[in-house]
Length: 339
Image (tube, rainbow, N blue to C red; front, top):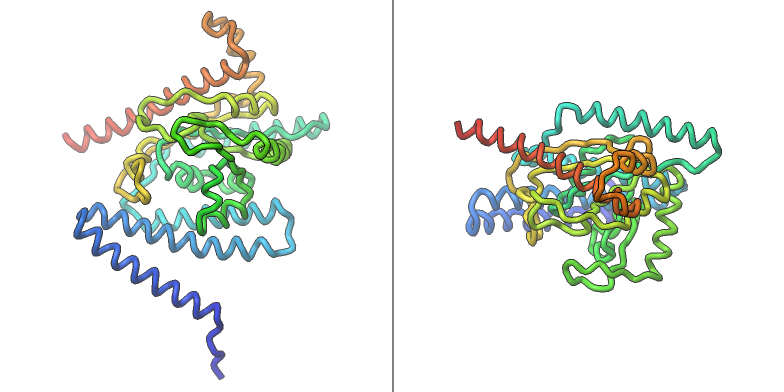
């Protein structure tokens, strides 16, 4: 005998029908208003929403399983990575192209992190964290960072997120399930970064625990999305101070073209583009050793700088060079197409 449909099955069927109807209506509206490019954007949005929905359901179920907190969070991160990769796989007009040495650079990163962990264990010290710094140009920055990060690293990755994102449907469940850290800003005014000190003190305790366990922290030192991504904004100092406190190993993960895929002020992205990206370690022996090396060069402008200011200055310079190299690759490729 056939089993009667359960309430859960009925709800799932209704959601699927609603999503299909909304997608069809969105496609027609996009075609009428903006032509084929907007159709592609709606298709990407539908793919992203669909995969986010099943990911949310799975991470919610996993949160009730009798597993350790870090294991549950790691599973959630892997599910998110899979969902975002699938959304891009079904959106072939958005392509991500790594530099030829991307895998080699990650192998190098895994190698020096393993050495740092072994040394910390031998000395009975807390494990050293890995900081991944990125350029912030679009809402899809975090999506592309997640899909391009190796599984070994994504399992222990965390980031800071504006607290208002923890209030959004679907996204809030994922943010909490994977253990990301909320940032409690006092105002939503652009360029103003005042935070609730009392609430952030509790958050930073959780961050410190994550870092002392050798976790990976991904963040954007510019502090806000950059309207002119070709020129990096000045780096804020909070993350640099934290890197020095924990003697973190630091790498730059840089993308070019994200703002074309998902322009600023757009609620949904998905426009055609070839996005280029690269990763470069610049403090493989730790933030403290990097600052010592920089001071040994005797640069006049840096003599009176505090360590975190010097670290921010050098990190900014290196990231700008890395971005310019990607921009040059894109420009060269576009020139060949025109020719």
